[in-house]
Amino acid sequence: MSEHKVSEVESAPGSPPGTRRRFNRGATALIGALLAILGFALAVQFRSNSSTDSLATAREDDLVRILDDQNSRIERLQGQISDLQTAKSKLSDSGSNNAAARQEAQRQADALAILTGTAPAHGPGISVSISDPNHGLKAEDLLDVVEELRGAGAEVIQFGPVRIGTNSAFVDTGNTVTLDGTALQAPYTVLAIGEAKTMDTALNIPTGVVSVVRNAGGSATVTQQDLISITATRTPPVPKYASPAPK
Image (cartoon, rainbow, N blue to C red; front, side):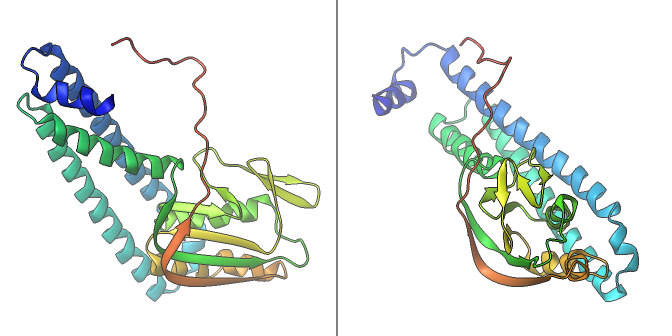
């Protein structure tokens, strides 16, 4: 049934003239939303990196490496924005091919699914093992791990069995820490996809995450890997007020 509808939209000369326009408007809206997300990510990246107090005591070599890696990441994001703007321009053209538009929309939807945590992700990154034999690490300490990774450019993070999302929260519950309602058990395993060297450096800077864990009586081991597989996913929230607009 779906293939028949696709063929009909593409080839039937009697198709309503608004069909193509409605599809192009939808695809353009999707690309525009993704451009806004990337712009927001750049702003958050800058604020996160500029507000990290632990960088004040970092060695000069570490600061130079972090700065170089962050500049490279910004360049990659700017390149993605440029690609999306080009795609948006093509899709806005009334002569755009519907098949190509659908392929571009699907590609962007797949990327958005990874960003929102609704799809598994694979790529280079790091694995972090954190021991806490004295139960000295609190919710704010585990949150710092995530914040350091985000500031270092981590694109996808899994903490224990939980996929980190924009609304994830660590909460102290008695002698344990819960993440999004799931009780975490030490030793903690954290997976992060992104630039491995940058994340490794960020976690190991003086007074950083590794130092905090050691001061609490535990240890943190960072392992760079060519392939990290993050299989945990998140269930998107059900909108309370919003509903699809009528076609």
